[in-house]
Amino acid sequence: MKEQPKQEAKQENGKCQRCEKLANEELKQIFTSASETTLEQVVAAFNEVNIKLGIDTCQKKAHFFAQIREESGSKLTPHEPESINYSARRLKNGDYVKGTDG
Image (cartoon, rainbow, N blue to C red):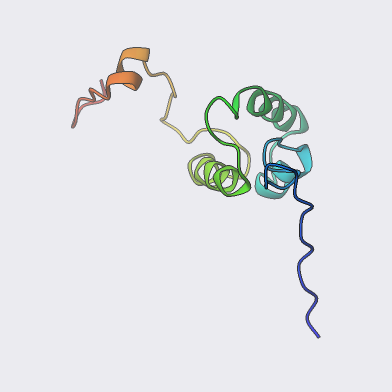
């Protein structure tokens, strides 16, 4: 007989205990080649701002880190030639120049 997945204990707000906080162990399963230092930095940064950014459910967290995994790989490093150096104006306004590197 197949073992059923264990249900998370729900808090008063209906979310599981892992919804709003990220644990180092969770990231290790996604970013299998990332350094311990990198994982610790990501956990600290994420837990500081995730609620403000609306990443407050397990489903949103899974989607967020799946996208990062796709873009950065198992080492949690950006793919070349991506610089991740965008101006606040471009991020806010989305005024991208298509067909150029600028």
